[in-house]
Length: 270
Image (cartoon, rainbow, N blue to C red; front, side, top):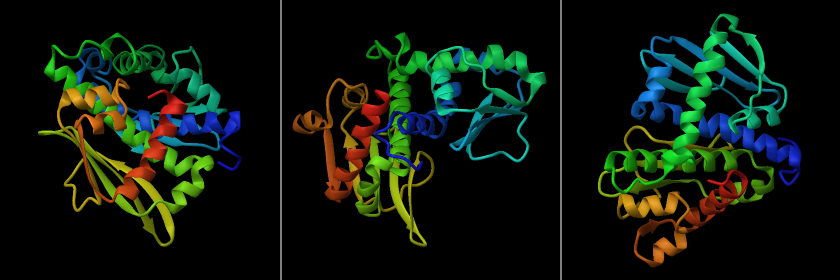
C-alpha cells in the first residue's frame, strides 16, 4: 500500500488483505466442524488461488475432505481467480455475485459457480448469520465459534499491523514480542507476534504448535467470557473489570496490539 489508509481506495485494499490473509484461513476450521461444508468439497481435489492486482495472493488446497490455507502463490494452482480491484474481491466476500477473471481452471467452473459460494455462505452463516447465535446450549458449537472468532481477531489484527499505512508509526514503535491469548481451561488459543528479522518487522498470527516464552499472556476465564468479548457483547475493559480476563506480562505490548484490534473492528465490524 502506498497511499494513506484514510482514503477509500486504501481502505478497500486493507479490507482485501484482511479477507485474503485473515479470513480465508478460517475455512480450515470451518470444514472440520460443518457437515454442509464437508459435503460441498466431497470428492474434490484442487488448489484455488486468489489474486488481487497489486495486492494479496493466497490459495486454498482442497483435498481428501480437508482445506489447507497457504499464503502467497502456489507453484501449480488448478484455478487462478484474478480480481482487478480490491473492491471486486470485497464485494464477493460481502455476498454479492461477482465474477472474477478466471486465469486458469475453466474445467472447474461448475464447482466455482456452486461449491465455493456454498463455502463462503457457510462461513458467513457462522460468523455473522443465524449460525453465530444461541450457542449457550451447545458446548461444541460454542467452542467452534469462539475459536473461529479468535482466529479471525488475531489473524486480522496481524494484517492491520502489517498493512495499514494509517498506523505505520504505531507498528514501528510496537516492541517486538509475542501475545498468547487463551481460553481457560483448555483452549482455544493462539498467538500474535511482532518479530524483527534483518531490520524488517513482521506481524504474524499462529494457532499451531508449542507456544514458547510469550511476553504477554491474556487469559479468558471461560468459554462464556470469551464469547461475550469476541462477539462484541463486552469490551476488553469491561471484561477486565469483571475479572473475565487475566492479563500478565508486557502491558505496553498488549496496549499497542489493542490499537490494531480496535482498528480491525472499525474497518471490518468484527
